[in-house]
Image (cartoon, rainbow over all chains, first blue to last red; front, side, top):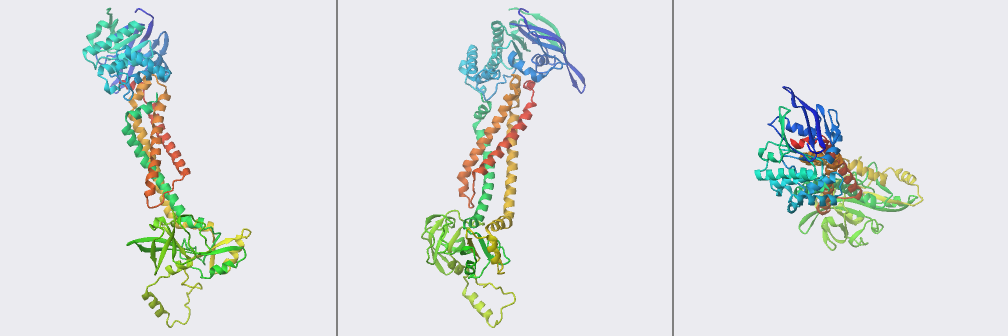
Length: 234
Length: 387
């Protein structure tokens, strides 16, 4: 870890009740992610990666343990999820396997929406959205609807949207799974640039081993536990 | 950014078809209420506009709008002599079939007492009011007649000298105004054989049968319309006339009540029931449309929540979309109603207060539908984006 800790999770546990008895989806995970750090979380299906993202992204409460953002405890077993919306809006950007763009908004409107939700004036939001799209070579697609964009372009727009509010933390769940090797690499390089240029902490959950060289650190999950980790420096 | 408007513009055809569906339902509501208003207005047309304070009708009967009524041919002169009476007019009304241009027509012949009745209570669209001469008629445009047309009624040919608009009876038949004496002749029409049979039946009858009325049975005068002196006491005048025993005196209010609550009661009830049913159907369909639109957007709603959007953003999205559907549907309905209803055979009266009330009801329906959608949307969790 190089900078101050942006995300800290402490003894994070999540149990689900099923017909076959309780399932320990996450079992006492502790992890710190620093500003400017690109962390890859690897692991087989059912290892707890997505549960970790849900808890770290304040989308679900842990059964026990805590989530801290920039030194502030934000989530715990009894946290009010609805009240965490404000924190998500300001401090966390999400990118998923599917771009999840709103189909009736153009690329720039999808980006501007994230800003307007954070009370940025519509004209300013749109202008900033255009600048961000231009930075990722999408200026010419700004007015295109998602249906008119390629898979790679959609995913890049989703990244731009996650970046729009300049959140200190970006959580990405299998962001390259639906892309070919070249486009998948492009997206990972964007994350690398964002982390380096903006000091954003980026956590990427992935199965994809093709871009491991770009991560500062790789964490392995198995059976809900963080079983090993290693640092890979460029 | 107005998400509701963006979504609407993204699929304009779908929105237009949805709005059109709502518009037809609202138009049906406007039509039913307008039909009701039209029937009531038509039924009360003569009663309200003929400018009479009292109606003197056949004794123990409810007058020409409720049942057969015949008063003595000289009843007007008897009533005229009652203190407090300013003027009197004889009146009769009956349905009549006639042929014109080779086609059968139907009208409600209304006998008015010209020249005492100067026709000031109705507005002519064309031509002039009845003069003193016989065999003239003023017809409503709905009869299909024009000024100058000549029609045969009974044994005589009448010339149409004037036209009215929207003057029909409670059944929707256009009114045909003729002088009271002409009306009596038309009503009295009989075939030669009928006259022969009547004469034969009368031969040898020396005494009036037990059930014979004091009113001459060949009288075709249905009622005598009375206007009172401004200073007259209506109750006193009514009491004087009713003391005669062979007539009944009704006020204009009683005539209205009789028409609305006796003669038209079942029809009014039926129309109002249908109106209520259409309103319920409209409410259900609009609610379903708004709810379906919400369900289709649950993923986007989850995404908005994931991005940290306040609940008000989601509420605005659903509420504005419901409002857009309602406003577009209502506006289309009013335009369609203005275009289509004048072509209907019965008059459909669209009154601004009725249109305002329908708008209010539709707004409430949309609000209720939006509320159901908002409740469903509030149950959506941000994490559903990942599912």
